[in-house]
Image 1: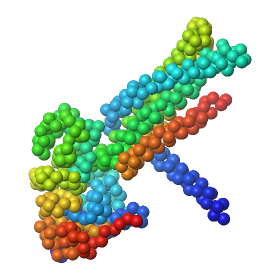
Image 2 (image 1 turned 60 degrees about the vertical axis):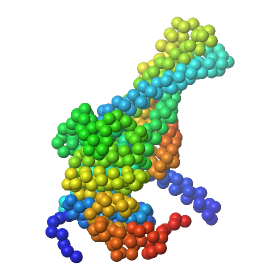
Image 3 (image 1 turned 45 degrees about the vertical axis):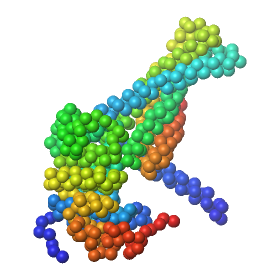
Amino acid sequence: MSTPLSTPKIRIRGLHKAFGSKIVLDGVDLDVEAGTSMVIIGGSGSGKSVLLRCILGLIEPDAGSIEIDGENLLTASRSRQDALRRQIGMLFQNAALFDSMSVGENVAFGIRAKHSDRSGAPPSRAQALQMAGDLLKQVGLDPSVGDLSPSELSGGMQKRVGLARAIAGNPNIMFFDEPTTGLDPIMGAVIDGLIVDCVQKLGSTAIAITHDMASAQRIGNRAAMLYRGQLIWQGDASELMNSGNAMVDQFTHGRREGPITMELRK
Amino acid sequence: MNAVLDPIAALGRAALGLIKQAGALALFALEALSHLVRPPFYWRIFFSSLIETGFFSLPVVALTALFSGAVIALQSYVGFGQYHIQSAIAGIVVLAVTRELGPVLAGLMVAGRVGAAMSAQIGTMRVTDQIDALTTLSTDPMKYLVTPRLLAGTLALPCLVLVADILGVMGGFTVSVAKLGFSPSTYITATLDSLKTMDVVVGLVKAAVFGFLIALLGCYNGYNSRGGAEGVGSATTAAVVGASILLLLFDYLLTDLFFSQ
């Protein structure tokens, strides 16, 4: 096993998280090199979303370390944690658009929130709305969509708006939580294409979690599989469908028979 | 043995649960209040909550106060008739409305209307990841969602109660003059004689406390809701029931504090 020459953009060591007696993350170790798009696959309840939420600070892990650019998030001061996490843009599974705001205001919110943190003076609302129009264009939406409310958009359009909001602060780390869930295959491919474009354009490091193998191969250049709270395999995304690992192969090919057993709740 | 101990254990668990909830609510309130003195303050959310709580609750509070004043006048007339002291009706109406009915009824109406809405709105944001999205956009959800609503609730309810006081007295006046045959000038004179600044001020203080509690329970239950639509529904119910009970409890405590001497 070779040692990376540079500090990974994200380094996770021994991450543990349990909810009551249920262990969700059981000593996860993961390195994500700068500029890499890492795809994490795994069954429902395997801990993928919890892992992302721990990095984002939405859930506090029980033990372990999470480093960004070599700095441990969990032991840093609150203000330093905030500064480190400001580098992260997140696209939620259901886009999580604010339904009390218009589409344009959603994107403008991302612009004002992130820019105010960096320069101290956020752009005015009018300026932010204008910038939001440009971002909507960037994700393939007409700027006039900005006047609509999120509930008037299709699932695919909501994902695009969520992506526009996520990239509003020019993040150098991006997280994608099941970006193609609920979308038809064509729209899934379109969203994946947009994600790849945005990540490349920003030069970001990305982590995506997904069940969708086609999406995983389109988005990622590295891949890992979580099973029962542990990373059981890491490799190139191109090896996903032929990893040589029995569990990964069963999962990626959707076979009922194999070492992975489905737990049914009694 | 178990038949004796089980109920005691259940009672103990319930008491511990209640203490835990009270502690969590107090910490939630303290954290929200701490954001009042730490910029930025979200004025747009504050003004929007102020209008939602104050202005849009005006019709329901006004009607409640008007009819309550009228009912008190009517009931007092019947009751006092037995002792031939119907002339005390104006004083009773103004006392009841300014000290109790104005703040309590306005509070209960606002708890049902605004407390439920706050809980449902914040609860929906919780279960649809909108609150997590706020965090990822470098925005503290407590500062953005809770603090402006607490301040708006605390300031809006006294304004509503002032209107309720006036309309409650007007309700009593209308029934007394139009139905019970009182002279308008006599009634107004008796009302003014019975009107005490202290009663009105204490009513407004109560209203501010009630407004804070309603917003606090609405935000707290919404913020901690879990499990989709059912969780939001439960949070909304808990917000209204909890606010109503706390409101009556604090009404007693404040009445005891100000009027027991």
